[in-house]
Length: 395
Image 1: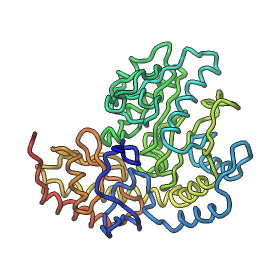
Image 2: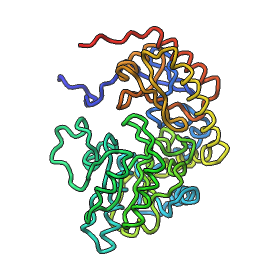
Image 3: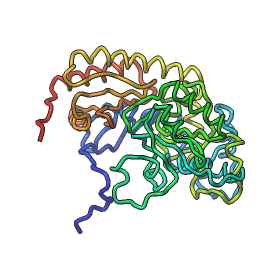
């Protein structure tokens, strides 16, 4: 057979991790990597965090899965904890970010259906967004690389310019159900929305009875220095999709909603075989034990500022490669003057793991537990690698 056993949909690189410890990954032949990618913002406590590991181990030997046919003491407890720490009144647990966004889309549409307005089913979305790879979530984007070959796409989405409030408001019509937006675009190039944009969307939703749906799959769970990024913007959403860091490496997600927004989500409207299983709930609880407090969030903000400052001081030494730093907390991006993907690929040979994004940006997404020593090691290594890097010749 010519096809590989693992379906060849990923351009897998030469890094082959078999073990992790703290901020490091180790390859099958003993290679050591400084991991400032964190599984694309997933391993927010680093690798092998003792509290998270112990919680998963304890739950695995107790009960992993039953069914959502039964009551869920574990799910009820973690949902209540999320409710107590956020805007939300209710939570649906999923297995991934894409599933969380799917649930958010359904919740927004069902809100209007339950209110006697089934014609209000369109979500206004934004250019260069990434919401997942299901049929609904690729239909919500304008990225052809995600959509190619999957026609016909699903109707119900209208894409406008990101961070352009006038364009967003102009797109509202009698079919609009709400807005679906990443407060900080991740795959799109670490682009934080302006506060004026986010408050403007909130005001429009209030005026027109629309749903403000936030995709915080990448920027949520302390990544920006706030438990969720909407707090930075001083607004509250109606619905929010969360995943990635919420399980610290265990696959899980959540759709958060207010009681009003969830009025249509009644028995039989949604479901998930594995969503909210006891093992996932133990992982989520352990993550929240660490991150859902002001002391830890302040650490993320302060350490993120030191990391940003160190990168900004480094950039003038390599101004043929780097342009600027942007982002919030420890969700940072380095805008490059050359192909970011080629640079990220080359950095792996230097033992540094980062992630490329759109707009020629390198994503810097370290574990939220890093300290000043980790920052020094990273910036020194990045600078030394930049000294050796040779920009590939144009084809």
